[in-house]
Image (tube, rainbow, N blue to C red; front, top):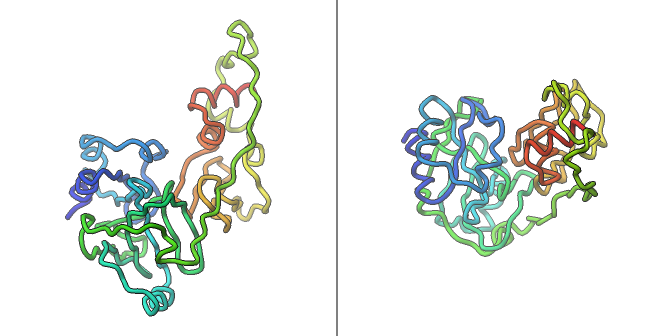
Length: 268
């Protein structure tokens, strides 16, 4: 089954998929947040997967969560004390992905040798190819995904830790005749980015190493500083997969549209 056929199979189950760069874990889209709440059309899937892209399933849809055993030792020790449910699973390079529909609200979690990908995350799915060359292999079918009440039912160490939330900003009423509120003429997106630094919008406690600083991701329950902030003002979370730039992050943290964010940042 190729990537398009796989995408259509997930689409029929009411679950969104997105394209991932070939032999990579990095999204091929500049921003994929829209597809966390909107199911891509068949036409969109046909456009995305007409080339050799990898494919990722967005977790959170219909309560979908994936328990990611990224250590063979962790997988083996877990098997010794648990019965492996009859559910769809995928062999990854180092371990296994177990897919479940979870009744309880579930957030992403990162533990020792095991992660949980839930709302706000994604996982590569067959026939994707890992950067190492390993081909993801499915056991069973997505139609066979099992249902559980809570991730704790199968992973007692799972912790539902609330994600960091930004402080609520007080906004001044906009006067349409106030020149100060108008978007500056000729001010480009790149110049707006240049005027803002990551510490202006997100807590930064560590020091940059080789131009990259790691922080706790504000878009999932992150206690391991999974998000990389780069000097060119883009970011990537290795926990939930979020990938975007400083303007999109500002917009999402303050519940703004992209145009509203650009206007506030231009006048900030």
